[in-house]
Each structure stands twice: as structure tokens, then as C-alpha cells.
Image (cartoon, rainbow, N blue to C red; front, side):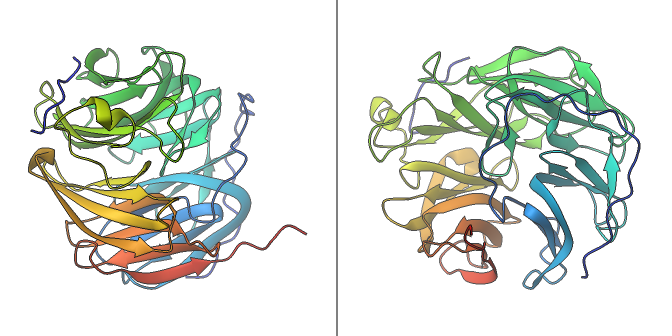
Length: 369
């Protein structure tokens, strides 16, 4: 359906290698991976962040240490417990069962894994292959020709599933119920572990033939939040729309970029800034959006509650024109990966819903040459 717009520790040794077939080159890798690309917090004290050549961890929610170093570029992660997790690299997939003290390489699918989402130590799904892959706020997404894959052995092997064309990102809330976003700005739902898919949402304003990327986060068997970046924008603006559902079928248009597509959607609240930023989902009713503001040089924070019916602008991360991912555990406690205007990649944290921010980690990338 198309919704009607309404206002309504030390680095470890090299990972253990598991024999695996060489993944088929498919498309090209992104030209740039930031030093901090994706973050996940399991508790207020325990979390991980990954990026270009490094895996970082915190055990107190404030101080970060490099847990693992590599020449590979890391673009995503998925932890399901304090011990079990996966990290996606451009050219490998790593797994851990001891909280990252050691990592081992897992089999790739026939084409390179772009992102993964597990619901248990054995069962998970991922997007593989595709062309024109872009890093979109914590997830690597192919612009086209991606495939959906599934694993029942913790990523040791993968099987391809049949889906609508051009899947970009997937999430599951339990072993049966999942969601899929495609390059046509369409959301599909499955109730049988991804064996079949039915259309749940055709997002508003997508121009066929123009690139679109949708960041989705499950919030329960029937609940999903979506942040869609679609089409081409005017100077200084990049169109985006956010949606939410708590019951599978009815959708709320939460916000839109006011200078482009939002102007065509009367009554829909404005998003935090002129470019699609980072999104972190807390539960079916609450999510946090951090805007990217290259013109304003700040990353503004908007708290969405009541399923997106209520939006509250709080504060902003200063001198941060670009963000890469966010992880909020409540509407108060959150962490954001950003690039400062001086060039450093940083982890910024808030304990009051974005009114005030504290820098916890800064990574400086040496200049070429």
C-alpha cells in the first residue's frame, strides 16, 4: 500500500580461517569506508563499533579500545548476545562466540555478503552480491541485482532465497517474521522465514530509474521503521522519508525532507535536516533520527515517540556535518558515529536524549602520502 501523507582490550591474532570457496566478484566496492562505519550497543555498558580496518569495543559505555585490527574494511555488525556476533567486511564475514576476544572467518555466499541479520546463534539472513553497493548509515546496500541468502548454521553456509527484484536490506524479528526493502522503494513482509514475500508498502514519491536506498529496522513481529533516501535532490538537499508501522498493515509517514519531497506532502513533519542521516529504533513506539547537515555543520537530533505520532527536536552534535550510524537504547541514552568538520571520525554519546553530547572516541585517518 502507499500511505496517504498525514500529520498524523588488545587486538587479537588473525581470525581462524575456515576453508571457503572464493566469492564471485560482483559490482564494485564503495570508494570510501569511514574509520567508524557501524555501531551496536547491547547494554548501556557493552557495545561494538566497526570501520576501516578496525573493530572497537566498550565495556563501560564510555571508554573504547581497539579489539581487532585488519587490512580489511568493515561495514556492518550484528550481535545477538554478549558473546555471539558477526562483523561484515567488504571481502570477508567474521564471527565470534566469546564477545570478540577471538574472531573466525565464515563461509561467504556465492557472492559477497553485504549485510546480515541473525535471530539466533544459528539462524540468520543476509543480502549478497549486487552492483553499485553503497554504505548507507550502518548497512552496505547494493543499488541493484542483490540476492537474499539464509543460513541455518551460524553463517558457515548460505542458501539463496527467491525474492522480489533487487533486495537491498533485510531484518527479522523472530525465526518466521521478517521484512525486506528493495531498490524500487518497496517494503515486503514474510511470515514463513523468507520463503514467500508479500508487498506491505510502496513508498511515496519514488522516481523509477533513480537510485533509492531504504534503511529498515525491525521492532517486533508486526513492527518496522523505515528511512528511505530516494531520487535526486535540489541543490543542498537530498530527499528522504521515514515510515513506521506497529501492526503490519497501517503505516504512518513520520517525517520528510522539507526542501524537496516534503513540500509535496502537506502535514508531514519536517525531518531533522536536509540530508538523510542515521536512525536507531528502540521499540515499536520509539526511534531516534540524527540528521546530516552539511550546510549547517551540525547533526540535529529528533526523538520520535508514539509510533512516530510525536516528534521532539532536542539538541545537536556540533561541527558534525555527516553521521554514519546511531545506537540508542532508550530515548535518553545513545551513541552516534560522526565525522567532525576537522576530519576526525568520532563516537559521540548522550545521556539526556540529545540535548548534550560527549565525545568518547576520536580516530584520525592519516592523509594520503
